[in-house]
Length: 104
Image 1 (tube, one colour):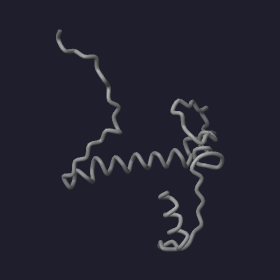
Image 2 (cartoon, one colour):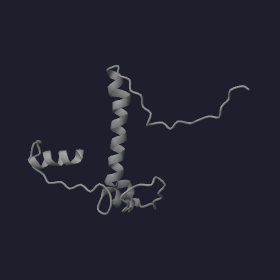
Image 3 (cartoon, one colour):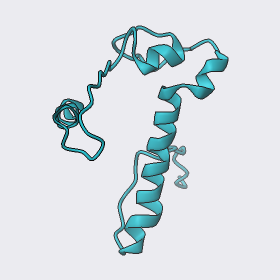
Image 4 (cartoon, helix red, strand yellow):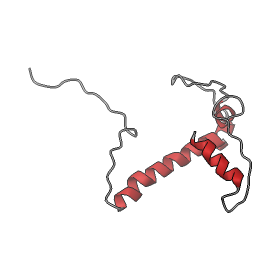
């Protein structure tokens, strides 16, 4: 996985901040998602309901996802258009299917 390549580079000391040892827990106990939502599930069903916890607002998991959204928005709405590059963005909008309105 990509994160393992990054971990290897960080451990080797290739970056200006020197060597560092990081751990990453994708899902389950000890993961950012577990800390934010108290879930230990290895897979998401998509219909989960989580209890509100005030600590969620300051969680690494929430802040990471906010950063992803901000980065994606910048690339799609500012950076690429600056160079006249257009990208179809089908993931950001849910398609709504309307009933067939064709006259009989």
